[in-house]
Structures are given as structure tokens and as C-alpha cells.
Length: 269
Image (cartoon, rainbow, N blue to C red; front, side, top):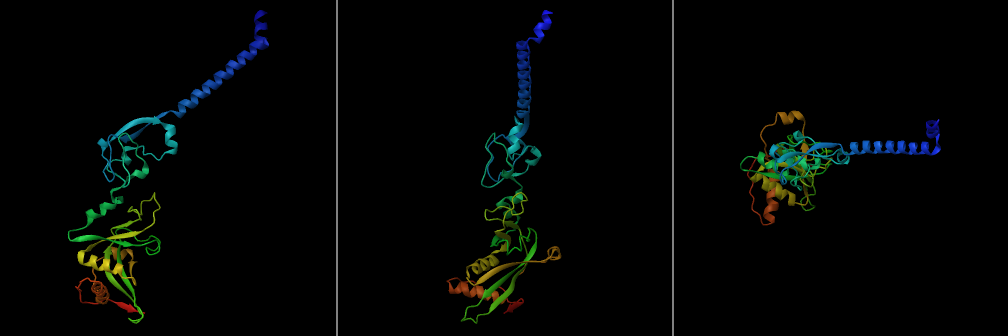
């Protein structure tokens, strides 16, 4: 009888309800905390890694962090995504630092990697372009294209437009944005600003002079895939355009003589 009165006592029931509620809340809290801090292992740097430096296995160690941190962080979690990759230009990885996705690139995404591909006696020529002159970013590294020059004569010269092929079958080594980064990094959505080519010193001079002529434009002309696959040697032999460039150089204190004699197709409009 006494036990029954105790159980049904209002105060006792209230106390037991409060205790049960607290127990449920504590249990739920512990569950949430354990899920929130559930540790995962990620790679971090064992030393300072400078920009453009290759990442090796000895540069990486694994540490545990809260899984909740990774929900909003673009952090690389696998060593396979790091080894033999490179630290992007303009950044570095400090000792103990995590590897963020925008800090790690392939070798060919480094601006200076293209210099390793050029033979002796050649240099890199960088042609300024935009989305329009690359045909909506349709010129790719490895493509063989032609370079044409457009020259608009002034009124004393006759006022005609000379438009002709200057270089045939030249390979595009890289397409870069205004910061020197690879345009075709699929994570970037970058806008083309430069096409890079390897050219002989003689040809480099002509191209740089052509850039200085206010009424002359250097135009990249893409070709089809078969043209790239069957590409012959790179040639430039348009005497009329070379004479225009040479004349401009002489008029401005330079002294560049023509090195070719044959004339390609040049159209006047």
C-alpha cells in the first residue's frame, strides 16, 4: 500500500519525468558531440613547401581532425591526390599546413613548365589573345595553327588591307590566363589571355616588331585535327609582310634585314 502511494505521488512522478528528460537530452547531446568531433585523417605538410615545388611522399604526414571541419573546406584528404603534384604559383604550404585544392596543380599548369619543352636556339613567344580571337577558347595546347598578319595601309600608302599567312603549322605549347595559369584547368573557368609558342630568335624579332606597328594585327588561325596530325615543319616566308615589318624597324632606328625570298598567298582588299 505504501509503495503504491509512493509511485502515484505527484511529486515523485514529476521528479522521475524530469530525470528521464534530462537523461534523454544528455544522451542526445553526447551523440551529437561524438558525431561532430568524429576524427578523420588528412595529409599535412611535414615541412615548408614553396611555390612550384614538387610534393613527395616524405613531405606528407597524416593527422586527425574533426570531420565537421571538412564540410566547408576544400581540403585534399588523400595522399594519392598530392604525390608528384606541384604547389601552385603565388602560394606555399607551411609546415603542418593542410593542402587545399586550389594550391595543388599538375606540372603543366605551372607557368614555367613550358620552358622545359623548347629546344636550344628557340624562345617562347607569347601572343596576346582573348575569348574572341581564340574562337571561344577553342585553341588547345598541342594544336598546330597558322599565324596571319593583317596590315591596314594609311591613306598615303593606298588605304588597302593586306591580310596574309605569316607562319604555318606552329604548335601551341600552352594557353594561359592573365595570371599565367593554365586555362584548361577544369576547376578554374579561366579566360584565355595568351597563346605560347616556341620560335627561333629571328622569327621572335619579327613578331615583337609586328606588335609595335599600330595598324598591324597578329591573328591566330586554327585548323582541323588532321592538320595537327599531319603537320610539317613550321615555316614563315611571306616576303611582303616581312618587308613591311623590316621597313617599320628601319624607320624606328632598327636594322632587321629580310631572311626569306619566297612569297606566300597575300590578299589585298
